[in-house]
Length: 67
Image 1 (tube, rainbow, N blue to C red):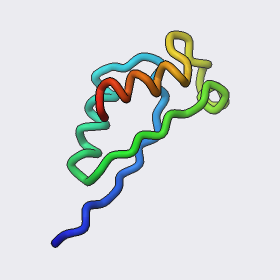
Image 2: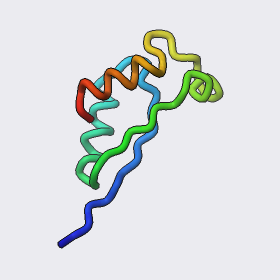
Image 3: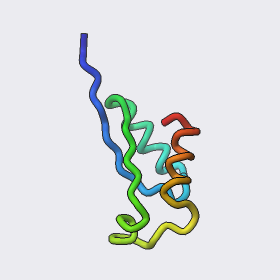
């Protein structure tokens, strides 16, 4: 039996859009997806600070989507 790979995807979920969905769908083709959500501070270190959602709300959104 082939072992299923774990695929890690790190993202900022300031607002969920089709690009995020595409990334998740492609990752699913490779194995079981685990999504890491960057903290607001980590996101702000390379781009603007998230303005719509914050870490706890991003986690809740992804749980609702059952990603």
